[in-house]
Picture 1: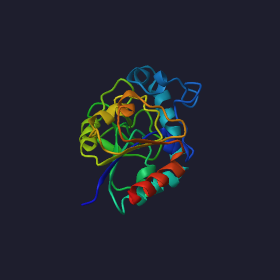
Picture 2 (picture 1 turned 60 degrees about the horizontal axis):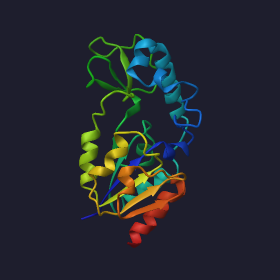
Picture 3 (picture 1 turned 30 degrees about the vertical axis):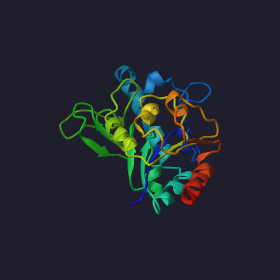
Picture 4 (picture 1 turned 135 degrees about the vertical axis):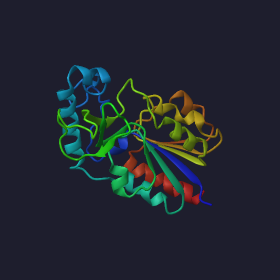
Length: 231
């Protein structure tokens, strides 16, 4: 039976495809404060601004392609049982060919009803005020905003508990609860952390079999693959 690799990915892997991260040095996301475009309060205050913001993000996503970091994770599936838990709202893992991807924070190419959260629809065009679900309620981006519950956290924690190897790629490990997933992983398993500017949080620094690779995902993930295939 193949070993199970659980992979936690963050904004760094997508940044190499040209998608900006919101935790840039100026603290803004495409010139907007996070509170304006990624919170329930921002949506209540100015839904038109929020819709325009995500329409621009969706259009940008459709213009970029997966990179070598994404493709290396696909190649891992030849020898390992790979499960990706991503903090990213893009679909670059799926477009690269990964077959098991859990999105913690929602998906940019989906929308959902503001009243009935289970009514989720694929969406590639602009979303406007007046676009309604089948029950007559406004649609919103299918994104988990700051201050909202993370419904996929429990399934992600269950995957972490089952991991034989844990791989972390392109995340600052500062956004909780995703950054705390390591506390669910078996303590003595091999853990690899790929990031050009790694930041060890409490959960990660306490893992005894940690290997840090200070490289971008496009080269670092391939290096991990070579190490674990030899091991």
